[in-house]
Image (cartoon, rainbow, N blue to C red; front, side):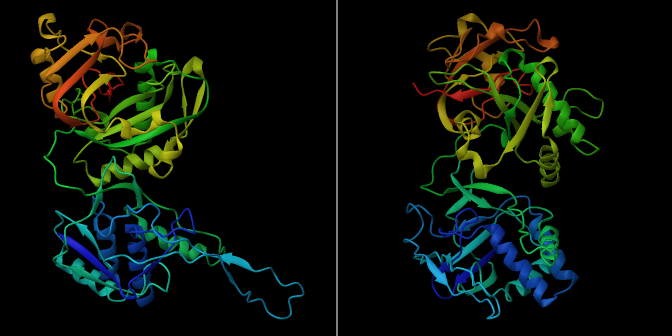
Length: 463
């Protein structure tokens, strides 16, 4: 375990959020802590050892867990009054500028100690000592009126906030290359004072609540969403061809050599049996006016993927701005980041597909590698070994009830027979499914032989 502690010496924090200067950023984001460490390193000229320690810190594969008073009190703080600061123009300026309003949002937590905690991290002693030296020179976090004491902690308390794909607290986190980016932004400000560093990676966090029994979860964890901006509407029936176009574009942008978890093929170009990058269309379904058109795409990575693979994939996605779909023309697309997720259509929110729930129904039909027995499918029947194998492939238990049919439970989804499968699955059974598990499982639930190319995507079903 590796942890950094922060104590607010005045018992309060003054720091604005990146999107609203009237609102306090609480708890302080990991990116803010890293920026303070970088500032201390640069100001004190601490040498190569300190730089290597910061590069090690920014490259850690997981975002830190946080111990702090959770921001669950509906807006963080008291009302923030406007303050008009006197203009500092020199006397020889003929027309003085009008006073400009400023805000100083502040918050006084119950506990003025905060800890950023990286679990399962074996910190090199040289790196830890270097970060301790940097931390000793950090004087404030946020506004200069928030003096702090920062140190490397060996015994932090249990976290109250943890990275959670279904969380609603968005925080700026750290990523590989952040140190270099901050230095470049600082140098550019010498000639253009309006330059600001990029926000960096936005990670959703959730509040740690009462311990609950560990539930089964899908092998897919990391998700990236691409949103349709401009171009003809795509009908969902040709999702195999649509997903093939998306995959081809990603492969063209991903740097060589392409790892197996991205390409989906082994060194002999045979299809990979282990979980790898999957592509799913996000359809307009599940509401009164749904027509099933393709709103965007989701890319799902399995858990336990290296930070290097994630960084390369994110870079490739950032370079993907358009797709060409033959007679449907060119699509302009944009990645939906966590910071703007709440402002997009609900059908593009991947949290819908990653909930904990016990009943799931298909949005795109499932392609069966083996034909299930009719006697094992239907109300009160578990689907037999065919459904057990499909769920086991993505880390889920056997369902206690499995139904199949030509029609989806979600309004707007075309019939299963209307979807055109890949050529190699042309003779396979494809059908919509309805699954019930003994206990809630965490999605995404993507099952069947075509799960990597758009088929078998399910959503929680709330009767």
